[in-house]
Image 1 (cartoon, rainbow, N blue to C red):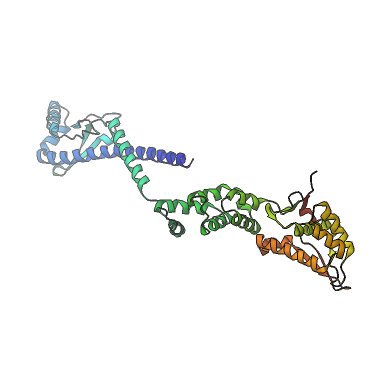
Image 2: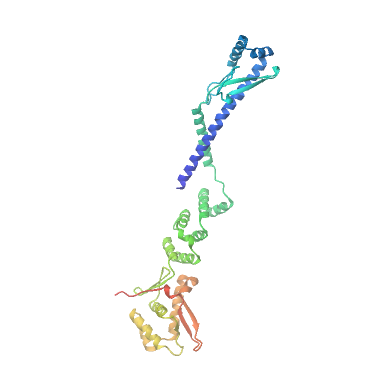
Length: 390
Protein backbone atom coordinates (compact mmCIF):
# COMPACT_ATOMS: atom_id res chain seq x y z
CA UNK A 1 0.00 0.00 0.00
CA UNK A 2 2.78 2.42 0.94
CA UNK A 3 4.71 1.46 -2.22
CA UNK A 4 1.62 2.04 -4.41
CA UNK A 5 1.06 5.49 -2.88
CA UNK A 6 4.70 6.37 -3.41
CA UNK A 7 4.60 5.31 -7.08
CA UNK A 8 1.38 7.29 -7.61
CA UNK A 9 2.93 10.42 -6.11
CA UNK A 10 6.00 10.11 -8.35
CA UNK A 11 3.84 9.60 -11.46
CA UNK A 12 1.85 12.73 -10.63
CA UNK A 13 5.09 14.65 -10.08
CA UNK A 14 6.47 13.34 -13.39
CA UNK A 15 3.33 14.46 -15.27
CA UNK A 16 3.32 17.92 -13.69
CA UNK A 17 7.03 18.44 -14.40
CA UNK A 18 6.65 17.24 -18.01
CA UNK A 19 3.85 19.75 -18.63
CA UNK A 20 5.82 22.49 -16.90
CA UNK A 21 8.99 21.82 -18.92
CA UNK A 22 6.99 21.55 -22.17
CA UNK A 23 5.20 24.86 -21.53
CA UNK A 24 8.42 26.59 -20.58
CA UNK A 25 10.25 25.16 -23.61
CA UNK A 26 7.45 26.14 -25.98
CA UNK A 27 7.46 29.81 -24.99
CA UNK A 28 11.20 30.01 -24.45
CA UNK A 29 11.87 28.67 -27.97
CA UNK A 30 9.67 31.43 -29.42
CA UNK A 31 11.37 34.06 -27.28
CA UNK A 32 14.83 32.80 -28.19
CA UNK A 33 14.24 32.79 -31.95
CA UNK A 34 12.58 36.21 -31.88
CA UNK A 35 15.40 37.71 -29.81
CA UNK A 36 18.13 36.20 -32.00
CA UNK A 37 16.65 37.31 -35.32
CA UNK A 38 15.79 40.73 -33.96
CA UNK A 39 19.45 41.18 -33.05
CA UNK A 40 20.66 40.00 -36.48
CA UNK A 41 18.19 42.20 -38.34
CA UNK A 42 19.09 45.25 -36.28
CA UNK A 43 22.77 44.87 -37.19
CA UNK A 44 22.20 44.27 -40.91
CA UNK A 45 19.49 46.86 -41.51
CA UNK A 46 21.21 49.65 -39.62
CA UNK A 47 24.16 49.16 -41.97
CA UNK A 48 22.15 49.12 -45.21
CA UNK A 49 18.92 51.03 -44.80
CA UNK A 50 18.95 54.81 -45.49
CA UNK A 51 16.30 57.53 -45.63
CA UNK A 52 15.76 57.06 -49.37
CA UNK A 53 14.86 53.40 -48.79
CA UNK A 54 12.44 54.41 -46.06
CA UNK A 55 10.73 56.79 -48.53
CA UNK A 56 10.50 53.97 -51.05
CA UNK A 57 8.99 51.63 -48.49
CA UNK A 58 6.30 54.16 -47.70
CA UNK A 59 5.37 54.68 -51.37
CA UNK A 60 2.66 52.72 -53.16
CA UNK A 61 4.21 52.24 -56.56
CA UNK A 62 6.39 49.63 -58.26
CA UNK A 63 9.47 51.06 -56.55
CA UNK A 64 8.03 50.08 -53.16
CA UNK A 65 7.41 46.50 -54.29
CA UNK A 66 10.96 46.31 -55.67
CA UNK A 67 12.44 47.46 -52.40
CA UNK A 68 10.39 44.91 -50.42
CA UNK A 69 11.66 42.16 -52.72
CA UNK A 70 15.23 43.37 -52.34
CA UNK A 71 15.02 43.51 -48.51
CA UNK A 72 13.32 40.15 -48.28
CA UNK A 73 16.01 38.71 -50.51
CA UNK A 74 18.66 40.09 -48.18
CA UNK A 75 16.77 38.58 -45.23
CA UNK A 76 17.49 35.11 -46.53
CA UNK A 77 20.96 35.52 -45.10
CA UNK A 78 19.33 36.00 -41.69
CA UNK A 79 18.73 32.46 -40.53
CA UNK A 80 18.06 30.80 -37.22
CA UNK A 81 17.48 27.12 -36.67
CA UNK A 82 17.30 24.84 -33.66
CA UNK A 83 17.36 21.39 -35.16
CA UNK A 84 15.78 19.78 -32.08
CA UNK A 85 12.70 21.92 -31.43
CA UNK A 86 12.29 24.30 -34.43
CA UNK A 87 11.92 24.05 -38.17
CA UNK A 88 14.12 26.49 -40.17
CA UNK A 89 13.16 30.09 -39.40
CA UNK A 90 12.84 32.91 -41.94
CA UNK A 91 11.87 36.56 -41.53
CA UNK A 92 10.19 38.86 -44.07
CA UNK A 93 8.94 42.41 -44.20
CA UNK A 94 5.67 43.45 -45.74
CA UNK A 95 3.45 46.44 -45.83
CA UNK A 96 0.36 44.21 -45.85
CA UNK A 97 -1.55 43.52 -42.60
CA UNK A 98 -2.01 39.82 -41.90
CA UNK A 99 -4.83 38.50 -39.80
CA UNK A 100 -4.37 35.58 -37.40
CA UNK A 101 -0.63 36.06 -37.04
CA UNK A 102 0.75 34.78 -33.72
CA UNK A 103 1.99 37.88 -31.80
CA UNK A 104 5.02 35.85 -30.76
CA UNK A 105 5.99 35.63 -34.46
CA UNK A 106 6.09 39.41 -34.94
CA UNK A 107 9.22 41.42 -34.15
CA UNK A 108 10.04 45.11 -34.39
CA UNK A 109 13.46 46.42 -35.37
CA UNK A 110 14.49 49.94 -34.43
CA UNK A 111 16.47 51.97 -37.00
CA UNK A 112 17.88 54.93 -35.04
CA UNK A 113 19.55 56.49 -38.11
CA UNK A 114 16.24 57.12 -39.82
CA UNK A 115 14.20 57.30 -36.63
CA UNK A 116 11.75 54.57 -37.48
CA UNK A 117 10.75 51.02 -36.56
CA UNK A 118 10.12 48.19 -39.01
CA UNK A 119 7.74 45.29 -38.48
CA UNK A 120 8.79 41.75 -39.47
CA UNK A 121 6.96 38.44 -39.61
CA UNK A 122 8.71 35.18 -38.71
CA UNK A 123 7.93 31.86 -40.32
CA UNK A 124 8.77 28.65 -38.41
CA UNK A 125 7.15 25.68 -36.66
CA UNK A 126 7.86 24.27 -33.21
CA UNK A 127 8.42 20.51 -33.38
CA UNK A 128 6.08 19.53 -30.56
CA UNK A 129 6.99 15.83 -30.48
CA UNK A 130 10.68 16.56 -29.95
CA UNK A 131 9.88 19.12 -27.27
CA UNK A 132 7.57 16.64 -25.50
CA UNK A 133 10.20 13.90 -25.56
CA UNK A 134 12.88 16.25 -24.20
CA UNK A 135 10.50 17.51 -21.51
CA UNK A 136 9.68 13.94 -20.49
CA UNK A 137 13.36 12.99 -20.26
CA UNK A 138 14.21 16.04 -18.14
CA UNK A 139 11.14 15.44 -15.91
CA UNK A 140 12.13 11.79 -15.48
CA UNK A 141 15.65 12.71 -14.48
CA UNK A 142 14.30 15.30 -12.05
CA UNK A 143 11.96 12.74 -10.43
CA UNK A 144 14.83 10.24 -10.12
CA UNK A 145 17.03 12.93 -8.53
CA UNK A 146 14.26 13.85 -6.08
CA UNK A 147 13.71 10.17 -5.28
CA UNK A 148 17.43 9.67 -4.62
CA UNK A 149 17.76 12.70 -2.38
CA UNK A 150 17.69 11.91 1.36
CA UNK A 151 14.43 12.94 3.04
CA UNK A 152 14.97 15.77 5.55
CA UNK A 153 14.95 14.43 9.11
CA UNK A 154 13.63 16.47 12.04
CA UNK A 155 15.33 16.59 15.43
CA UNK A 156 13.02 14.07 17.08
CA UNK A 157 13.58 11.59 14.26
CA UNK A 158 17.34 12.15 14.53
CA UNK A 159 17.25 11.39 18.26
CA UNK A 160 15.21 8.23 17.67
CA UNK A 161 17.46 7.27 14.75
CA UNK A 162 20.45 7.30 17.10
CA UNK A 163 18.45 5.12 19.50
CA UNK A 164 17.79 2.54 16.77
CA UNK A 165 21.37 2.65 15.49
CA UNK A 166 22.30 1.07 18.82
CA UNK A 167 20.50 -2.06 17.58
CA UNK A 168 23.06 -2.35 14.75
CA UNK A 169 20.71 -1.15 12.03
CA UNK A 170 21.78 0.74 8.92
CA UNK A 171 21.17 4.48 8.75
CA UNK A 172 18.10 4.04 6.52
CA UNK A 173 16.71 1.19 8.61
CA UNK A 174 17.14 3.30 11.75
CA UNK A 175 15.35 6.26 10.15
CA UNK A 176 12.49 4.02 8.96
CA UNK A 177 12.13 2.56 12.46
CA UNK A 178 12.24 6.03 14.02
CA UNK A 179 9.41 7.20 11.77
CA UNK A 180 7.28 4.14 12.52
CA UNK A 181 7.96 4.53 16.25
CA UNK A 182 6.50 8.04 16.09
CA UNK A 183 3.22 6.64 14.69
CA UNK A 184 2.69 4.56 17.85
CA UNK A 185 0.77 5.95 20.80
CA UNK A 186 2.36 6.28 24.25
CA UNK A 187 1.36 2.79 25.46
CA UNK A 188 2.52 1.08 22.26
CA UNK A 189 5.85 2.88 22.63
CA UNK A 190 6.09 1.74 26.26
CA UNK A 191 5.47 -1.88 25.23
CA UNK A 192 8.08 -1.65 22.47
CA UNK A 193 10.64 -0.05 24.79
CA UNK A 194 10.14 -2.84 27.31
CA UNK A 195 10.63 -5.51 24.65
CA UNK A 196 13.69 -3.80 23.18
CA UNK A 197 15.37 -2.88 26.46
CA UNK A 198 14.89 -6.38 27.88
CA UNK A 199 16.32 -7.85 24.68
CA UNK A 200 13.27 -9.91 23.85
CA UNK A 201 14.79 -11.25 20.64
CA UNK A 202 11.81 -13.21 19.38
CA UNK A 203 11.54 -10.81 16.45
CA UNK A 204 13.81 -8.29 14.79
CA UNK A 205 13.55 -4.67 15.92
CA UNK A 206 11.57 -3.75 12.80
CA UNK A 207 9.22 -6.70 13.30
CA UNK A 208 8.75 -5.79 16.97
CA UNK A 209 7.68 -2.32 15.89
CA UNK A 210 5.24 -3.77 13.38
CA UNK A 211 3.87 -6.15 16.03
CA UNK A 212 3.21 -3.25 18.42
CA UNK A 213 1.56 -1.26 15.63
CA UNK A 214 -0.64 -4.19 14.56
CA UNK A 215 -1.97 -4.84 18.09
CA UNK A 216 -4.49 -2.00 18.10
CA UNK A 217 -5.84 -3.07 21.51
CA UNK A 218 -2.59 -1.90 23.11
CA UNK A 219 -3.65 1.68 22.37
CA UNK A 220 -6.42 1.37 24.99
CA UNK A 221 -4.33 -0.37 27.64
CA UNK A 222 -3.81 1.08 31.10
CA UNK A 223 -0.98 0.55 33.56
CA UNK A 224 -2.39 -2.74 34.89
CA UNK A 225 -2.59 -4.22 31.36
CA UNK A 226 1.06 -3.39 30.83
CA UNK A 227 1.97 -4.89 34.21
CA UNK A 228 0.23 -8.17 33.34
CA UNK A 229 1.92 -8.19 29.92
CA UNK A 230 5.36 -7.81 31.49
CA UNK A 231 4.61 -10.47 34.09
CA UNK A 232 3.39 -12.98 31.51
CA UNK A 233 6.34 -12.32 29.20
CA UNK A 234 8.84 -12.87 31.99
CA UNK A 235 7.27 -16.28 32.60
CA UNK A 236 7.36 -17.19 28.92
CA UNK A 237 9.65 -14.88 26.91
CA UNK A 238 9.15 -16.83 23.69
CA UNK A 239 5.44 -16.16 23.30
CA UNK A 240 4.50 -12.54 22.66
CA UNK A 241 0.97 -13.37 21.60
CA UNK A 242 0.34 -15.37 24.78
CA UNK A 243 1.54 -12.46 26.92
CA UNK A 244 -0.70 -10.14 24.89
CA UNK A 245 -3.72 -12.43 25.46
CA UNK A 246 -3.04 -12.54 29.23
CA UNK A 247 -2.78 -8.75 29.38
CA UNK A 248 -6.16 -8.51 27.65
CA UNK A 249 -7.77 -11.12 29.93
CA UNK A 250 -10.39 -10.16 32.49
CA UNK A 251 -9.61 -9.71 36.16
CA UNK A 252 -10.60 -13.09 37.57
CA UNK A 253 -9.42 -15.97 39.72
CA UNK A 254 -10.37 -19.45 38.56
CA UNK A 255 -10.08 -22.55 40.76
CA UNK A 256 -9.73 -25.76 38.79
CA UNK A 257 -10.66 -28.41 41.33
CA UNK A 258 -9.75 -31.20 38.93
CA UNK A 259 -6.09 -30.17 38.44
CA UNK A 260 -5.96 -28.17 41.68
CA UNK A 261 -4.51 -25.21 39.80
CA UNK A 262 -5.27 -21.52 39.87
CA UNK A 263 -5.70 -19.28 36.88
CA UNK A 264 -5.36 -15.61 37.80
CA UNK A 265 -5.92 -13.08 35.00
CA UNK A 266 -5.23 -15.86 32.50
CA UNK A 267 -1.96 -16.97 34.16
CA UNK A 268 -1.85 -20.51 35.50
CA UNK A 269 -0.32 -20.93 38.96
CA UNK A 270 0.24 -24.30 40.58
CA UNK A 271 -0.07 -24.30 44.38
CA UNK A 272 0.65 -27.15 46.77
CA UNK A 273 -2.52 -29.14 47.46
CA UNK A 274 -3.22 -28.03 51.05
CA UNK A 275 -2.68 -24.26 50.47
CA UNK A 276 -4.81 -24.58 47.32
CA UNK A 277 -7.69 -26.11 49.33
CA UNK A 278 -7.43 -23.43 52.01
CA UNK A 279 -7.55 -20.79 49.24
CA UNK A 280 -10.59 -22.53 47.73
CA UNK A 281 -12.20 -22.65 51.17
CA UNK A 282 -11.88 -18.86 51.54
CA UNK A 283 -13.22 -18.42 47.98
CA UNK A 284 -16.30 -20.51 48.70
CA UNK A 285 -16.96 -18.49 51.85
CA UNK A 286 -16.76 -15.31 49.73
CA UNK A 287 -19.34 -16.72 47.32
CA UNK A 288 -21.68 -18.14 50.00
CA UNK A 289 -21.59 -15.22 52.49
CA UNK A 290 -19.67 -12.04 53.14
CA UNK A 291 -16.48 -14.10 53.18
CA UNK A 292 -15.19 -13.17 56.62
CA UNK A 293 -13.66 -15.96 58.71
CA UNK A 294 -12.54 -15.26 62.28
CA UNK A 295 -9.17 -16.72 63.15
CA UNK A 296 -9.28 -19.30 65.99
CA UNK A 297 -7.84 -18.31 69.32
CA UNK A 298 -4.20 -19.20 69.77
CA UNK A 299 -5.02 -21.41 72.75
CA UNK A 300 -8.28 -22.86 71.50
CA UNK A 301 -8.57 -24.53 68.08
CA UNK A 302 -11.93 -24.22 66.30
CA UNK A 303 -13.77 -27.46 65.65
CA UNK A 304 -16.61 -25.90 63.59
CA UNK A 305 -14.08 -24.37 61.19
CA UNK A 306 -12.19 -27.66 61.16
CA UNK A 307 -15.36 -29.53 60.20
CA UNK A 308 -15.98 -27.12 57.33
CA UNK A 309 -12.45 -27.68 56.06
CA UNK A 310 -12.67 -31.47 56.52
CA UNK A 311 -15.78 -31.60 54.30
CA UNK A 312 -14.01 -29.59 51.58
CA UNK A 313 -10.77 -31.61 51.78
CA UNK A 314 -12.58 -34.93 51.62
CA UNK A 315 -14.56 -33.69 48.62
CA UNK A 316 -11.46 -32.52 46.77
CA UNK A 317 -9.08 -35.32 47.75
CA UNK A 318 -7.01 -33.44 50.31
CA UNK A 319 -4.01 -34.99 52.05
CA UNK A 320 -5.01 -37.62 54.59
CA UNK A 321 -2.65 -36.22 57.24
CA UNK A 322 -4.15 -32.73 56.96
CA UNK A 323 -7.65 -34.21 57.31
CA UNK A 324 -6.64 -36.35 60.30
CA UNK A 325 -4.98 -33.41 62.07
CA UNK A 326 -8.16 -31.39 61.68
CA UNK A 327 -10.24 -34.23 63.03
CA UNK A 328 -7.90 -34.81 65.96
CA UNK A 329 -6.93 -31.28 66.95
CA UNK A 330 -9.38 -28.96 65.27
CA UNK A 331 -8.29 -25.92 63.24
CA UNK A 332 -5.42 -24.18 65.02
CA UNK A 333 -4.61 -20.49 64.56
CA UNK A 334 -1.06 -21.46 63.67
CA UNK A 335 -2.23 -23.85 60.93
CA UNK A 336 -4.57 -21.38 59.22
CA UNK A 337 -1.96 -18.59 59.46
CA UNK A 338 0.71 -20.82 57.90
CA UNK A 339 -1.49 -21.72 54.91
CA UNK A 340 -2.50 -18.09 54.31
CA UNK A 341 1.17 -17.14 54.38
CA UNK A 342 2.04 -19.91 51.92
CA UNK A 343 -0.66 -18.63 49.57
CA UNK A 344 0.70 -15.10 49.86
CA UNK A 345 4.29 -16.21 49.31
CA UNK A 346 3.42 -18.23 46.20
CA UNK A 347 1.28 -15.53 44.58
CA UNK A 348 3.70 -12.74 45.41
CA UNK A 349 6.65 -14.74 44.07
CA UNK A 350 4.81 -15.46 40.83
CA UNK A 351 2.95 -12.19 40.24
CA UNK A 352 4.83 -9.61 42.24
CA UNK A 353 3.47 -7.57 45.15
CA UNK A 354 1.38 -5.16 43.08
CA UNK A 355 -0.46 -7.71 40.93
CA UNK A 356 -0.88 -10.25 43.75
CA UNK A 357 -2.44 -7.75 46.16
CA UNK A 358 -5.93 -7.90 44.63
CA UNK A 359 -6.00 -11.69 45.02
CA UNK A 360 -4.76 -11.96 48.60
CA UNK A 361 -6.52 -11.30 51.89
CA UNK A 362 -7.92 -8.33 53.64
CA UNK A 363 -8.32 -8.27 57.43
CA UNK A 364 -10.07 -6.46 60.23
CA UNK A 365 -9.73 -6.81 63.99
CA UNK A 366 -12.55 -8.09 66.15
CA UNK A 367 -13.20 -5.53 68.86
CA UNK A 368 -14.38 -8.12 71.39
CA UNK A 369 -11.85 -10.91 71.03
CA UNK A 370 -8.97 -8.84 69.57
CA UNK A 371 -8.55 -11.59 67.01
CA UNK A 372 -8.57 -10.98 63.26
CA UNK A 373 -11.14 -11.68 60.60
CA UNK A 374 -9.84 -12.57 57.13
CA UNK A 375 -11.42 -12.84 53.68
CA UNK A 376 -10.35 -12.73 50.02
CA UNK A 377 -9.67 -9.24 48.79
CA UNK A 378 -11.24 -9.72 45.36
CA UNK A 379 -14.98 -9.23 44.78
CA UNK A 380 -17.13 -12.33 44.43
CA UNK A 381 -17.87 -11.70 40.74
CA UNK A 382 -14.19 -12.28 39.98
CA UNK A 383 -14.24 -15.77 41.52
CA UNK A 384 -14.90 -18.81 39.34
CA UNK A 385 -14.80 -22.43 40.48
CA UNK A 386 -14.60 -25.40 38.14
CA UNK A 387 -15.88 -28.34 40.15
CA UNK A 388 -14.69 -31.92 39.91
CA UNK A 389 -15.95 -33.96 36.99
CA UNK A 390 -17.05 -37.52 37.63
